Amino acid sequence: MIIYAIRNLRKSKNITLDTLSNKTSISNSYLSKLENNKVTNCTINTLEKIADALEVNIKDLFYSKLDINELKIKLNETIDEYGINSKEALEISQLVDLVINVINKDNEN
Image 1 (cartoon, rainbow, N blue to C red):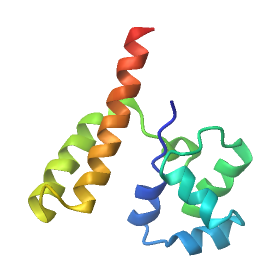
Image 2 (tube, one colour):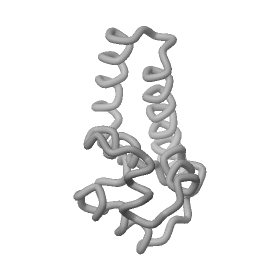
Image 3 (cartoon, one colour):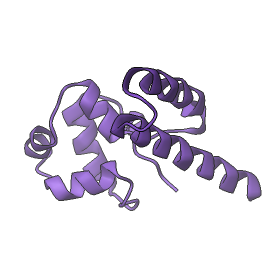
Image 4 (cartoon, rainbow, N blue to C red):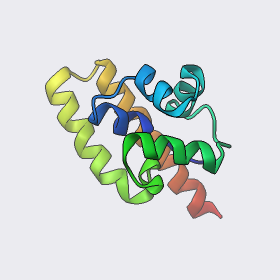
């Protein structure tokens, strides 16, 4: 399973989904599906467009096993700032769950 870090990169650069769509000529709906990990078979060409628009290396568009601790720290900080039931905490919690599931599947194989 691939877990994209596109939303966090986009938000960290204060770029809206509309702006990213305009810069890449990729539809808002497709970008949203990528950000929500609903699409996992994205082409290299599409990923290159996104990486160029965000001014990052293509490998930065993905979460890896190494990001789990950083995500957990960010989750705790977000809970402290917004509360455990906040939308922000839920989004990070879902990312942590996805990364943990990928790690567990890799360990099973």
